[in-house]
Figure 1 (cartoon, rainbow, N blue to C red):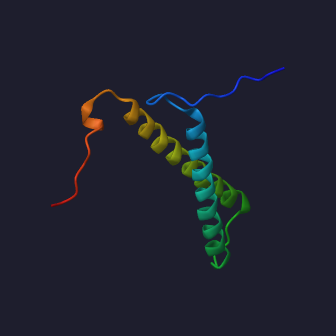
Figure 2 (spheres, rainbow, N blue to C red):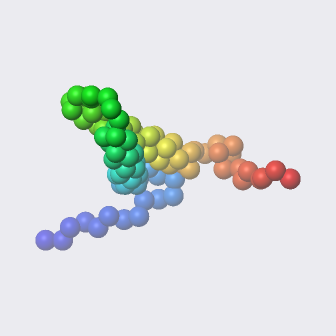
Amino acid sequence: MRFPSRSKPARGSFDPLKVLAAMGFGATLGSLVAALMHRIMLNTPADLPLTRLQAFYGILVASGALVAFAIESVRQLQVSSPEADYHRRRRGIR
């Protein structure tokens, strides 16, 4: 049985696999920030409940994935837009 091969999407079409990859990258960055915050909070004299810390770490990871989702989705939608304003090359300061 042959499985259908995934062809390369046409230019300007939305590719959900790129969005999922970006979300994975964002979640990885969020977990790195959560690990950094964990190290910082371990060295504080405050008594923090474990459930609150776990919720905080989950929020950091989820927000990293959400930011990456939003950035990649908007980038792909701008590429597929027929309006010329999205495709103008911006020149630096002269």
